[in-house]
Image 1 (cartoon, helix red, strand yellow):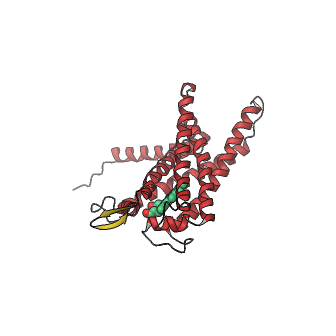
Image 2 (image 1 turned 60 degrees about the vertical axis):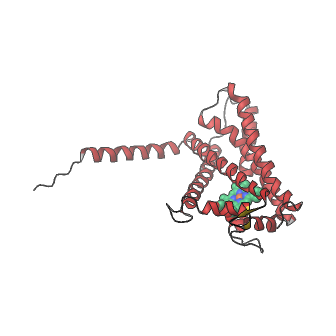
Image 3 (image 1 turned 90 degrees about the vertical axis):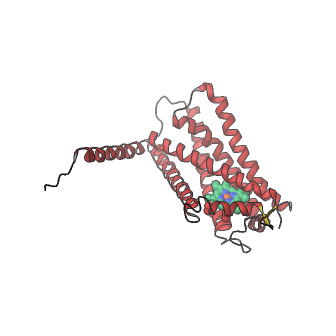
Length: 255
Ligand code: HEM
């Protein structure tokens, strides 16, 4: 019997998929496309830092009783993250899926920022652009670059501190509360967390403000709402995150 292969719909789907891929690659090669990527990955980052802060606030709930045992609430939360979707998936699989989304978002965010900077350098302003606007835009983007680099360096330290324990001699895997106390009770480390989170706050303020521009949601009628949101997110993150090193120094977070 002749083997009949229906090519029509399959190749049609393949062509459409290839066209869509090419469209995305073409879009990313433009400044507008890179700004979309910055905005979308930025929203993922904002979602993460807000969720991370809410989780960390459990440190203030101290000890709770679970299955007749006294345990730190924030340690239970850390374990919960590793157990998401168990037994549908093996332990830590769902957490790794979330981590992969975050890693991809971070890589894309940094890549788009870097290539936009290169594009801007190549296209210096000429002609009619108001020099006042240019200076303001340039100040904001320079601030974003510096605060972005500080946040990246902080993140490397932070993972070495709380996830891998390389820079914390008293690190105990899974003992989140104890690790917070051990790490943030050291004055230089506490100072580093304060400075880095202020830099993150500035980055989040400018970032939240400009993501509306990048996505094309920039009707001047919404400007005060936009400013309020940018201020609210930045303030929440700075106040929340800076509270942890202060609490550890004050003995509020203490084993
Ligand atoms: C004072 C503020 C912060 C505190 C007290 C804190 C605390 C922690 C702790 C205790 C962990 C380990 C959790 C566990 O092992 O279950 C952790 C992981 C992590 N933190 Fe933070 N964090 C802070 C700020 C930040 C900021 C600002 C960022 C991002 C810019 C961040 C990104 C991360 C990441 C990516 C992980 C790894 C998550 C994972 O491996 O699943 N943290 N943090």
